[in-house]
Image 1 (cartoon, rainbow, N blue to C red):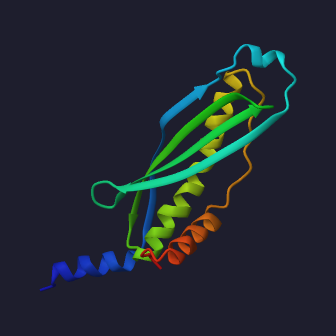
Image 2: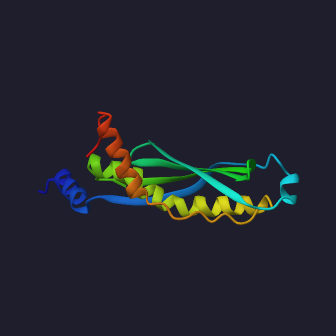
Image 3: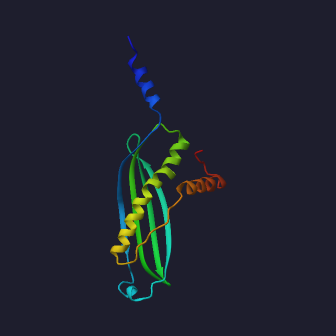
Length: 161
């Protein structure tokens, strides 16, 4: 007679790590053009400020939500032309990773997946506000993740290696 639980455990172990994108969605969206319509009558010399943030939380089981927040403030001279923000989120099924790999996956790999969606959403939002297209440059989330780990080590905060 075969020992069924040992077969199932061996099958799970043989599969190794698993990663699956379950859903991508906009969690929150905001646009404000405080100087409209007067801003449209001025010469357009914009300066762009970008704030970027990620957060994650574990849902039930091996499901995780990762939220990438992009906040853009565009000034024309000294006046704020518009402020746009998107929280682009995704639900990911992640199994079989050690702590360091899980931290990297949630902190860099998942935001890399979400960024093109957030960038397109912001661009669409800005053009609907009647402003020129806003095509943000790609972001290296692996480098940002490494910088954050280094900052945490310098501050003496516990990090996942």
